[in-house]
Image 1: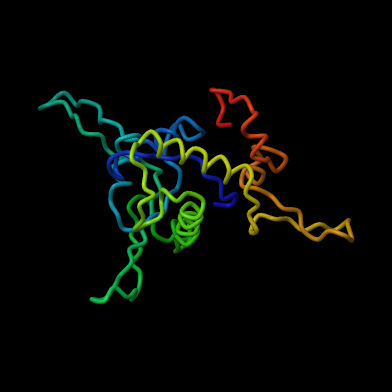
Image 2: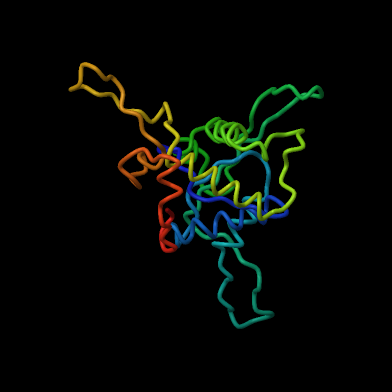
Length: 209
């Protein structure tokens, strides 16, 4: 949340399968043992995806049928923020649900808002017309949609100067702020990339970029 970095993406037929892809990616990128602390809206597919990727089948006790279902493990942290609406669709309040972990601990760790998630969704829709609602610009092939999403994430992480990430400059009277990208805030790179630099870069299959 601090860097605004997009660390993983998932594209599939439904949100549960897409979330499985996201958690599998995160498992390879620094979260091998348990899912990162997560906050979402009231949709329930993320819980199922967490269990699918990180859950474990209990050891067989020697009686009855051997267990086959994966179960959540200790130490997981997942908070849902469920929006309450009236008959006209107006927001009337929110309900916090601790899916995994203690409610107060989750509130202190993750806050009680998904505004930053909604904001990056808005940025995605501005960057890629394929994600705009009620338009004919949608992707006709999933491969093209995946390619567009990869390009969008690359440009956002490496070239997009995020106003909330800028740092104040104290030793330069001609400059007050130093702009930073999400990748710079996450210490993945030390400069703002250009589109030309991305196109000419040779990707390393063992790294993110």
